Length: 458
Image (tube, rainbow, N blue to C red):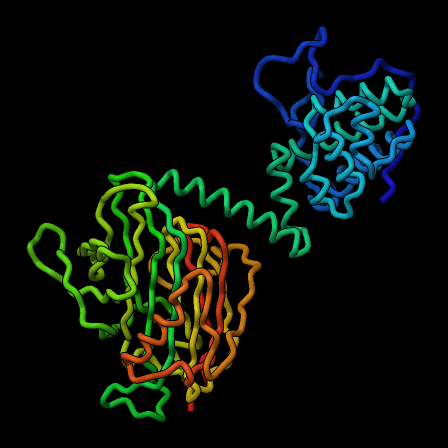
């Protein structure tokens, strides 16, 4: 892109991008962190412009000016270490300049912008090396235009880079999104005082064996496994929710359901009431000693929680629960339901998430499933809404069929666990095809929705 050239003007003293009067750093609040400082400017005018076009013009203009500046002193932009040695510059600075000059995408330029002080240092070095004044001035002008853009649209360089990520190809966005999630995971761990190594979920859909549910009616049982692995407290006073089932129609109206445990249920205390409730633990796959769990009454039923306890890795625990929703739903659409979905509520800072969906060979559902991620900051317990959708670049992977390949390093006993649960229901892995979705550092508070279209009504 060729930027409009300005009318030639009389030579002016070189401007410092990071100095106030007398060469000192200006005191007081900082302005946009690429715009010049120490220069009085009018309040930014509200300009209605296309952000992508304006950002491209400003960032490509800076790239062009820096390229011309380096070439004017015989510096090779692709050899940042040589530039650092020749001009006695910081290697990190010359690496950033090299990445800007060689960038093909405006998001890459934004991700490597140097600050005003660093740009001043670069310009001073180029001036000492004999760069023409107009080349240095072109870089300063480009920095001013970019600072104006940031003031209007972003506020700072970091926010500009985030905004431009949405315009980047998937591989670049994936890297940046994963880095942002990793930072969020660490921050949420510190804020909430807990974290887990992995959250593992598995749903298996099978023709219902419930009395009164004809085999050919499309009614299914849903076998569920929910595991929280390597859960540890970072603060001893923290209680943490484990599991609460919610069942609803497409329109958000609640549905009744009945569950049966996979293993003989263990009872846990219900608060301080003296009552006890059945908890569907799979004890042979939990950590030893058995994790302490308590039940809490809510307006919709019971919620199982981990009480406060000792902190650190030596006290990390694995909690595995499993049950089956009997005669849960039909695979055929009706006037209230067109989609089958399995929402996974994400509320624990977790380094990894994995969800498997197993479909019995007698169920002709259309696969693979669709997976979407939604915020839960503004939604209630009903189905997620499209305006709350969050970016998600990971894809569903097939596990094969009859049997699916269940092994994963994330949970070394996962295949054994699934075989155990299915076996307790009189089933075998050889009867299923499978699909898996996995991601690192899932955001909270959010819900991952695994869905598929229901078959047309008979």
